[in-house]
Length: 206
Image (cartoon, rainbow, N blue to C red; front, side, top):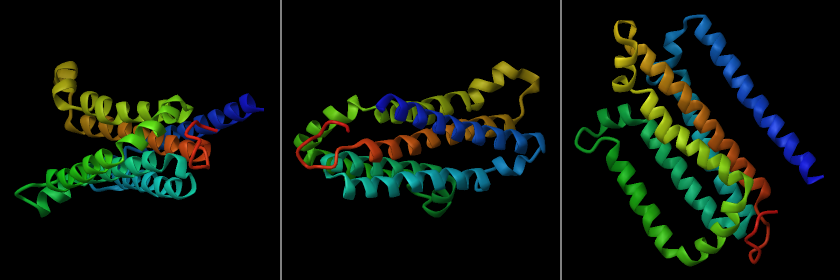
């Protein structure tokens, strides 16, 4: 029964990725570059996925107290991602510190929280790292924080494409990779909520 459930969940996640990919392909075929511009629809989807991560993390912290501190940390990470996505707006609004100012405040709050709950969090992480959701969350983090920033970067693309390079390529590639990374993080957070133990004492996944 467990294997069947895992297969069904994996199949549904694959459908979600396929639907997102087909939708983006349709938009690209229509040459709708505006969709990928800063502050437009795709960035709104990024913010929606990150908001979903934070909402799911709050729900998890309430409904799954055995991993409460893990969920609080996930909510902090979702907030950091949201601040990073608002970098242009925050840089214009806060010309001295820009988006790094709010990000530093959130990072300091996260560090203080992790220090305060380090013993309990260590116990929770034993079960969390063994869960199937952890792999999905980690992969989403790597895709978003490393792959999107490296591949979707002008310094990487311009030497490869030479005269064929256009700035819009960087934008489209970076934004598309990010949306799939955020989708993976959101689905991983949902999976964590569904599979986390309910009780206080047991910190291993259901």
